[in-house]
Image (tube, rainbow, N blue to C red):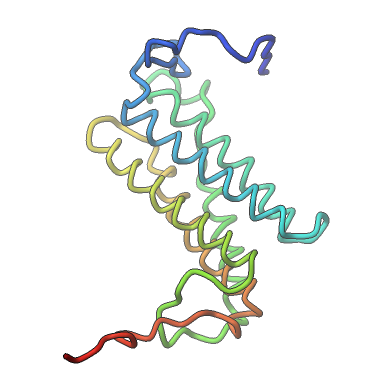
Length: 192
C-alpha cells in the first residue's frame, strides 16, 4: 500500500533519489532514466485516453496498459536479486501476451501497409504515435540498463509489444488506416 502524507520531502534536492529498496542513486542513473521514460510513456497514453470516450473498449484497454506500466515502473525501481523473486512485483509473461492478443485483434481488419506512415492524421492517431515514440525511447533506455544490470526480460518484451500496439492503434484512429499519412520517399527533392 502507498501512503503519501507529504508530496515534497527535500531529500532529492541534492540530485539523488531513492530506489524501491531505499538505496540512494543519482537522478541521472540509467535505472532512473529507464523507469522515468516508462512514466513518460504512461503520461502520453493518459493524453491519448483523453481523446477516447470513457467506456469505449479502447479507453478500457489503455487504462489496463497504464496500470501495467505502473507495474513495470515498480519492477524497474527495485534491482533484481536472487532472494526477491516471490516478494517483489515483477512484470509477467501474461501482460505481454495480453498486448499480443490486442495487436492481433486490431491489426487483422487493417489493409497491409505498402508504405511507411508519417505520424499524424487524427488527433487520437497523433497522440498514439507520440506515445509510441516515447515507448521506443523507454525501450532504448531499458536496453542501456541491461548492459550494466540484470533486468526482468519481460520488461523489454512488454515495451516492444506496447510500441507495436500503439502503432496499430494509430492506424485504427486514422479511419482504420484509410486516413494514414503515407511517406513519399524523395517527394520534396529538387534537382539543381
